[in-house]
Image 1 (cartoon, one colour):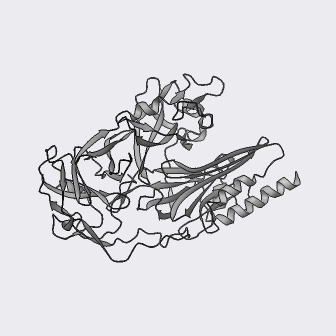
Image 2: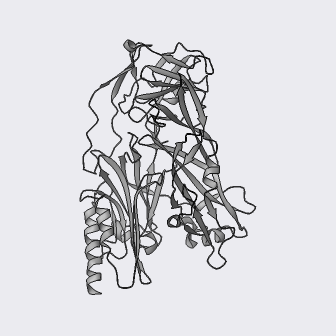
Image 3: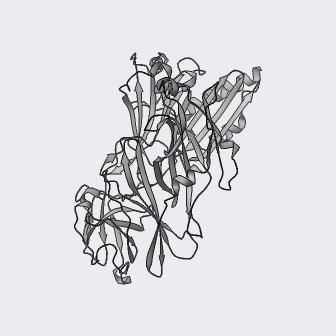
Length: 516
């Protein structure tokens, strides 16, 4: 997944550093191994240094960055060349007793190793190595992830490791492990109650609203109290139309579980689907996602922090699209950004679907049935990206598709910023969300103005603390913009910036306020 840190400095040569550990197999009594200080691990970076982060949002290149070379040396092994990134497929070919590097922590001080003969991992941290019985091999060859810090405040490091546990139709489940080294011996704890911990804090109504076919869902905060600001109502009208003859049964949690690390802190993300009577699979098109930080408590149990909740929605459930097949999309923009802050750039793609083609995207998007999407794909290593996007957002000029998607940089980190302005039935909606591709909000603002009030200065103050004039505008669709500016798209041939949209939008909202 996005947090699986493969080394930043990479080459196009040998795909794995093969080493012959003088270790017995996993489960041996020699669970910890110390290496002398004179033989401590060293890493020498060769080639051009990673470019220093700047305030400029536009990348230096929109093609995949060229890899660099790294040499790796430890006291146990002769110096060898560490490839491009570590190839999990190559590590799986290694026999018992030989190990390949699978991934690194974000700061590259800790690495995790494995082979194809033993379903265990070896943690390498400076002059210490620990073998832990954590299964990691999977059909997608996705490496485990590792982070280390003094999580319990005892003065020693502990480790979090996540691995893929199961995949299938509608299923993607990762596991999280906590490794506490006590007197040189690693103790492994697995987070087995993650589904129960999420489920007990989700309070979904037993039935849909009879008139509007909505499902009301409340959420408990980490103290067990209802968090009214997180409550949502999910419209199931289109789902009932698409699945005529089926009825709502319940929500379902447990088939979609992912973990990522931010600043060393693990976060759990679950997809919550809709369970229909007499249907085996959950329906996620009208469900929601929840993200929450994970921590290990003093009593030895895992705990979830406060929730971040986001609805999921698919335009294929709109009435005119219910019986249509998924259309072919045309990619108009591709860029690479480290939106998960793990040291590797995800691929950002803008796609459009045009029933009626036109050289001018704005004119084309005015036509009924024309729309687009921005998607973020996880970097898997070996130059490969995921097939299913980590995050996606659809856009269209119609009121329902009113959305603006920006890419910005703050304090050296890349961020997605999504805004929406919508005015109708006497209400003006202001909404922005600064988020990661796994739907965790770094900053969120929402306000609804009634009557004659149309301008919200607090909204723009908060938004402008994230966006700069040169922040990239990926897509902006807004039917209330001046003619010719209702749809703005950055493509591989044409670049647009945040100021182009926000300056005009701000002036128009202020002018309406002045008139009223």
